[in-house]
View 1: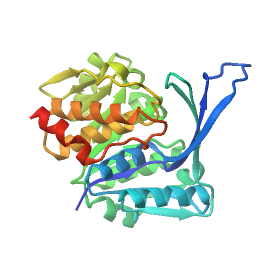
View 2: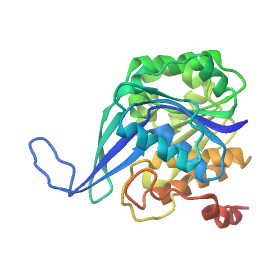
View 3: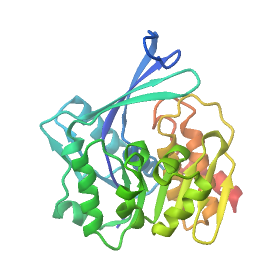
View 4: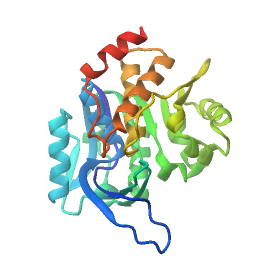
Length: 303
């Protein structure tokens, strides 16, 4: 059995370091360029692999240089890739612009990500997991494929990171996925888009729909975690911000790691904050993700 299997877009992130994010009509010089494999669920899965979890992935790449880089990186991290299909099309690309404060602007080209289909092979693979971690796709076809997967799957806990792409679908279109989620990860803007409320009032709405845990990242303020009988606001760990790309994905990995270790809700939130704080210290979503040994003393300090 695997601990977590991810289902989401597989992209090559092309990150441009700039003095500031350009506004309409502005021309801003590019300081440097960095390429790295990405995709929200894939980042979370790579982080969990570094933490020693048994992980795999369901997704699609093209038969091109970008796809090969993504596949090799996941293999290097120890991710099982049997659920990743190849296609003749182009691999997904994210163009990201990161300024000196660590803020970013992202542009997505979905490529073959939007050709993902769910078949018996995918279902059989997904049934091996304790958790299935879902993140967003750009296109409707792959979104429907995820919903089909949830319809046909039982006995696996669902972890859901909607991101802004799915948050824009609003509550009425996300009910099916939310009600089947064991844990849902959001930021402040996303939960307001979905529920029309701030996180303190929006979280109970999602719990009432059927989610067992609602987790909201609060940027430099930390996170808010809520279950049926408890909720906590947990302070962030201070760190110099270099690049916020992948911070939410890293947080989800830390939180899921805590759940897999059967830690309490507050400790899971602290683990999420810690892994996210380590992620944002360098450029790229995976560059500074920690390994299990890096967290041993931290975990001991929480006990």
